[in-house]
Structures are given as structure tokens and as C-alpha cells.
Image (cartoon, rainbow, N blue to C red; front, side, top):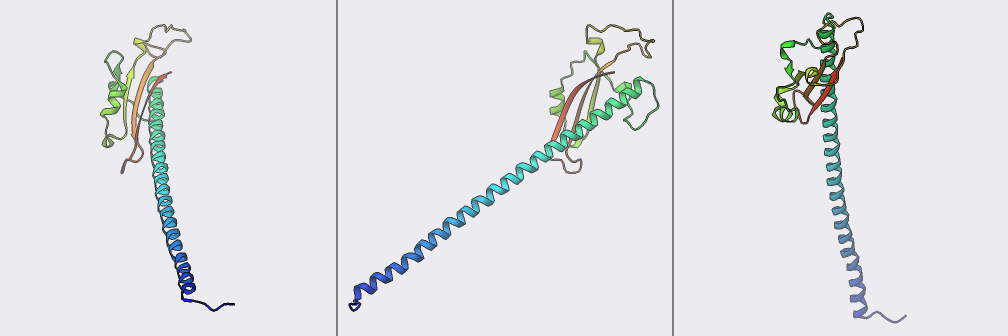
Length: 170
């Protein structure tokens, strides 16, 4: 084996230093991948939280609507108030009052949780005929109501809200 010269030593030394540069570059690339992965995970967590808040708000407003329907049914059938919301007929709107559910929903705020608007709309619906099945308890045997309700996901710290507009016929 021939003796080592100064040039061999310098070339071998440069090769050992290249490993350090490559290792540093790889470390920087891996750190960038880690940072991007953390940002993606954080974004997915926020998206899941927003989906949950919207779903809870929708479920809350559905509960308000179902409870209002139960209260209307107790009122119309003249049964004693049970577990449902007590309905005051003076709160009922008329079908010809120009009510717009979208505009009403936009005027609600997180502080008005929950809110409900009830309208009796059977007088404005054409094509209803009496069936004369034992006689009605009210003047109209088949009342129809439009129920529009608003609720948020959490009454103390709301982050999402929902409005449901439905038609309820007894």
C-alpha cells in the first residue's frame, strides 16, 4: 500500500464533512415535515370541533321544535300541561302577517337562546275539507302550525347556532 499523501488526507477530510451537511439538511427537512403535520392536525381538530358544535346546535333546535309541537298538541286537545312547553295562544302569529323565517333567523342572536315563533297557517292553506269524524274540539278540526325555532350549541358559551322551520299538522 502506497504511503498517504497530504492530498489524500484533505480529500478524506472533505468526505467526512459532507456527511455532516447532509445530516443537517435531513434534520431541517424532517423538522419542516413535523411542523406541517402539527398544523394539519390542529386544523383537523378545529374542523371536528366546528362540526360537533353545528350538530349540537341542530339537535338542540330540533328538541325545541319537538317540545313546542308537544305543547301545541296539549293546547289543541285541551289536555292538562304535561312535560311539554306551555303554549299561550296569544303568542300565535297569523298566516297573513308576512313572516319570513330566514329574516327572523338572521335577527336572532346568541343571547336569545332558544327562541320560537309559532304561526297558525291553516286558514291560508287551500284544499282542506272536514272529515266529520265525531266532531271537532275546536272550530278547525285540523289546525296547521308553522313553527320556527332557533337554538345554539351551548347557552353559556355559544359557538354555533341553527334555525329550523317546520309545519306541524294535528
